[in-house]
Amino acid sequence: MRCPVAVRYTDREDPGRLRLVKDSWLVCDDSQYKYPIRDGIPVMLPEEGEKWKDVAEDDLPVPPPPESSS
Image (cartoon, rainbow, N blue to C red; front, side, top):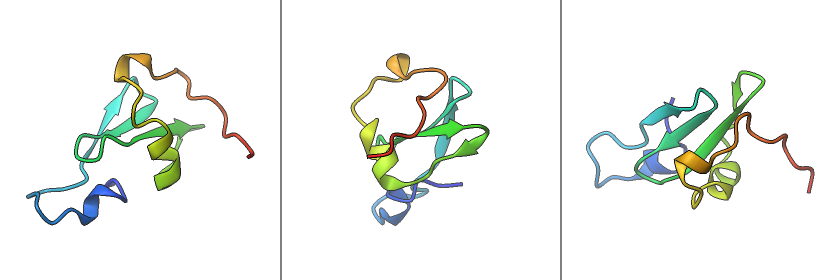
């Protein structure tokens, strides 16, 4: 599984790799997007990952909050 944003980066050797953080988040070091895992399902929407981009890994909530219906 890869970050749908960073996988397009052509200036990196292996772009978009994700790592598991707190057993509840997938984090991309290339884009800094953070994708929540809700009910065991990764939410890999770019707009969802972007929401959490500026949140420090230590501050990510566990479990991730439910999806907001905005």
